Length: 219
Image (cartoon, rainbow, N blue to C red; front, side):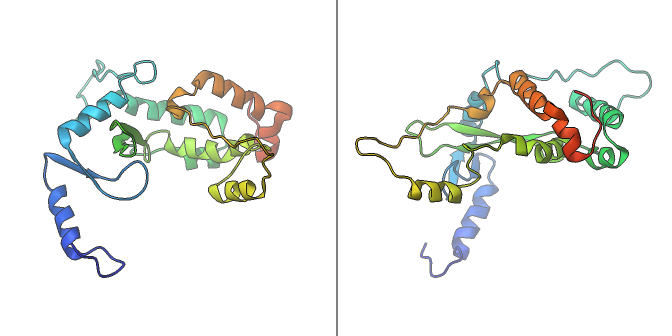
């Protein structure tokens, strides 16, 4: 297919549309860089399942319906029950205006998909969990904006542009080299309980959280 302008050729778009209509393949994008990846669906599902097979980091949620009186709901999932729990807890802690803004109505389940790591010698999958619209998404987004200042220090780089400027201005002594390290599965290896304790201690040190956001929350 010959490309004659900045936009993809119609024949290419038509071919991609036809491929997306097939149930035996998956059309997606790679984990790194740009492009299109066409994979056999069974292989895609196998690699995606392998990426979340570690029971130390992922666990199955039992989907059994609880015994209730009256007519059972047409659609049920145990995570939907947490929507009411989160809302009642938030209303006890936060002012009404904030509680109304972070409450969820008609939440949905998170959506799991994978991005193929085509840059690796052995093909693997990066699991991505799309949580927009879930029962705790609005609350998590609010907390992220409030707690983000706690992650900034003299060693923090906000974006690639700041990093580029620092590298260009850095003078490396003769005989020394600059190295970079990559953490394997960083986010799923973060110890959650320890991280939460660190954030809580920093947030309530000298009553910083309440003083900064005009709240009255106890640790």
